[in-house]
Length: 160
Image (cartoon, rainbow, N blue to C red):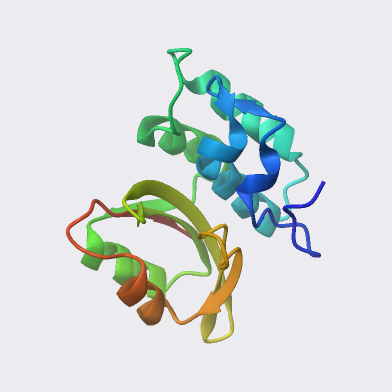
């Protein structure tokens, strides 16, 4: 299977069409569990992507198609990464992101709600699973927000 970087991050959800998440192909709605997996990978947790995907899937009380909900993301992160803090709103998210080592950002990519993960790489950041062509993307946080995290959409970020 592809979809992984050489260092073990999931960078492209398009490769997960043979897995089911929330009664759909995970290639369609897997960005939430992928972001959670990537942060756990960054922290050195020994966990498989299937374990993250399955646990987050079963945290949803309704067995219906859909994306990862914010209550599920919050609950999962609180359980496994209690040090992560949430910041809501574009400006709060931007300020928190610039001072973080890693995080999960929820914003709207091409008019679709989307979760991505990122890690700090010196003065820049490495973003995973942004969109086609930007699967493993390095940018300043300022440029990423200017080109991807556009008003007036809802923005939330979890940082460590």
